[in-house]
Image (cartoon, rainbow, N blue to C red; front, top):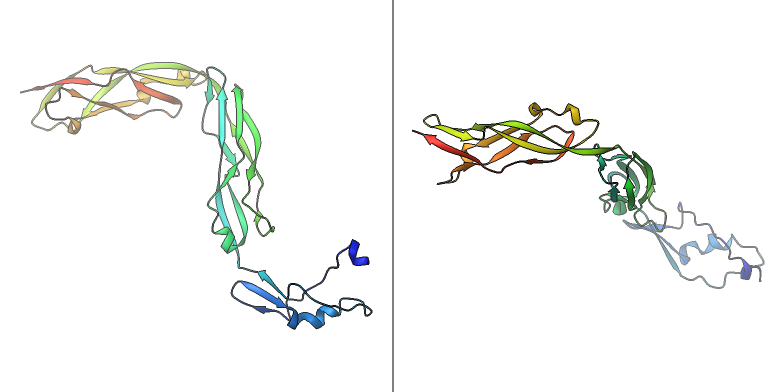
Length: 243
């Protein structure tokens, strides 16, 4: 009657009465009956054992470091944006557990971080979406990651930048115009006065000219890290070859 309200617990000694394969320890009633019987009072008798075989999976523990992937959707207040990329700390975690399970995990994703009308710096903690761990075989070095980002008010700016042409053959002389083009960009108010034309470099490659073409294609090959959404005021630079 006492077992009706509380199921009995038994202890299995893995140092004896256990056989093993490459991935399982195996206990069966024929090997373990006598030891099992000693765990019950003398006035109680084991009538049957079901199941007659129990398998315990085992594996070599492995340690793997995987990256944290941030899942986010941030809507900024009008005129505001990130000064730099979002910092994640930790940006990776260690997973400890059976190699057969750990080897299948390539990364850990965060819960979705949704923010609206943002106009101040971001400081928050986001839970990690842990892989399935039904039996508790996996251990994780962290369950959350901290998110940090600087936010500032942005404005549009523009500077006039010289255009240079590279790879002109030695036997050819060209004239091209315009010699300068406007570069439009998006930058924070705190950096606005620090942006100069020398922060940019625009070139046209003579080798990129298509046959019968009458123009060069300007490309921005240098720009400061403090600007975003950089655009040229024109896509073509006209040229003529001087004989």
